[in-house]
Image 1: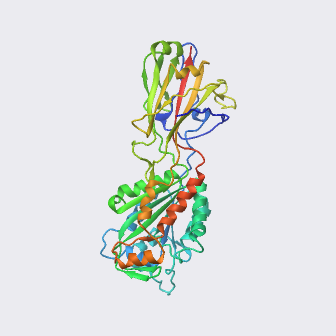
Image 2: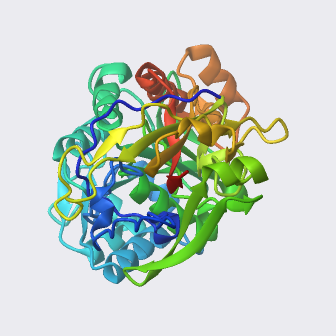
Image 3: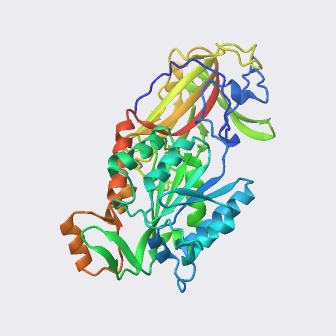
Amino acid sequence: MGQRRSTANPARWVAQMLPAMALALAACDSTPAPKLPKSDVSCLPAPLKPNPKAAGGYQVYLDRSFSMSGYVQPGFGPIALADLLNLLKSSGESRNLPVTYSAFGKKIAPLANAAAAQAFTAPAAYGCDTNGACDNQESLIDQTLEDISANGDDRLSVVVTDLWLDNKSFRGTIDVALGNPLRKILDEGKAIGVLGIDAPYAGSVYDVPHVGKYAGATRRPLFVLLIGSIDEVTNTYRLLASRSPLMRGDVARYALFTAAPFTEAVSPEFKVSGGGIARGVVFRDAERSPEFRMNVATAIARHGVIKATVAATPDGGTELRPGLQWNGELRATSHWWRLADNANLKQCSAGMWNPAARAPDPWKRMPENDMAAAFALDDGTSMSLSVPGHYFMLGELSVKNLYPNPSSRWMEEWSLGDDEATVKAFVASRPIQFKALKLASIAKLMNDELVSLEKEARPVVRFPLVVTMHP
């Protein structure tokens, strides 16, 4: 695992850090360490992860095509759509976030409130209104995705649909009509979560290519698309899967597509052995933060070492996040800066931190665990930090070859191709569990786009370490 030295200019930045991950500048025996102000996090030279945007609420889009009524028939008992609407409403209320609703057919129409959205948990909402007006013959999913890609705000968009991609569901080809907005969403760094639910179904499946209408299905996939920031998509999926038995286990599948797969922040458990290294506790903003200082001469003589095992996933499994599965090589790097100017910490002036002239490579592979790397700052690696002073390190684990995402294979299994032989053979088998038309095309489109965006390894874990070195 290679080490690379950052050449970025230290700059003022503001980010939310988990207190347990922040390692304070330590005092050495002979010279007091500089006292960082309470806003010291803005005085470090690099962020742990991109600044999170404040959540903007939920925007829910409900497919109002007539075939959707098959998911909400009386006698089904609890239905997934009702659970979804109730959970989003309660989440919005508890977080003081707005929840707005629209229904889409040929046009996108806003719904007045949560009660109007709840009406779609019964079949009547999918028919014509009292004036005889109907918008239930087609649902233009491309128009909905265009609306989401164009809004540019911080809301999480939630789309509930059967994703039946016949010629009435979009204008033009899938690659352009659906591909353009999906690529724009991914290129902007947003995430797209696809939750598939094997749901009870009663009614006909319309617009089956080369066949027309099919009756006999008792189960059919229902889809929830989650589109927004990686954290909001992940948190909302976890909310749905943890609270509703209809959205987890054997009846549900999930895949995540994103160009920014940061895992949740992890706090490595640093251990000290040998001699020449001191560790203490300071209080900053009412939180405890570990600190280290190293006496190089003593550390060499007594084999002092600061070490940790850093995992790319919180649970050490194969998923970087739910729905995003590991299939690449782990790369570990470290970026080092030395504090050059103690006097202007409060002003966080430019030039306060400089890239270290020589930087150690504290990483080693772990043959028994390809999801983690061993970090060790010892008498050998620390010799690179030959100039006494205060050093900030940004440790980073990165991965490459995330896509095609293995967690999206179920989308191929649940997909029905549109060629005549395939469709007629499938229908002739009289399936009670139907499939989603051309679902695999959506998975391929997003996987291909993310492969094209993957120019270098993507960071999945970052953590800081600040050490004071003295002779």
